[in-house]
Image (cartoon, one colour):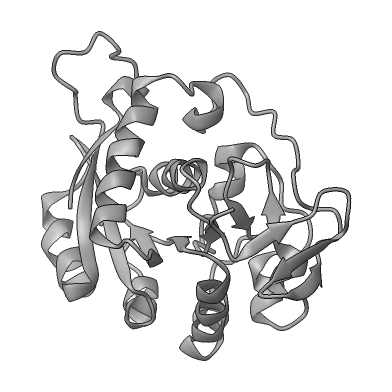
Length: 256
């Protein structure tokens, strides 16, 4: 297994570098998303959208063979950054890359909604405040899925959770456990959330949406991301030569 993580089925522990941590039975939860779910790796595994995420995965893995901690954001709301975060994390995990998806958009958490799973206890906020360990809070949804740290409660003012003093140790720990750590983050504009944490990550993807993204927001967003920007994903971009032109047929293209 190409991983620093070993899951022993039937046992309530996870081993990381020889040390055992309890997982309290949270691994391998069965997902039953609705038919119109945006988790295309589960609902439409043979669809064109999955192929687009595979292309994005390939470009990222070529650029960063060892992986890293990557923030996914957008210039403004409604661009599809959570959709990209979730499906990209599934794509990486399906390819054997040990992957953790972390919801850090406290103002509008969307990972649970996208995968049709409610995080009722043991959220990333509990980890950041020292109430639970990473091992106790991880969720896993099968052998081809990423591990997930979700948010239990939406926060209108999440400043206490975005302190580098809290996030940097979390990112450092996750780096030792996973090849890829995908952070679903808030939009760059108008809040300062991304600006506060960008220095603590290895890189960032910016998701823009055709006919949705305001051009006035793009330049300020690029300025905030600066040299940490690894690429741009264009959401809802038509794919020439395909008859698969539903919403997901037009899912995304990327420039890395």
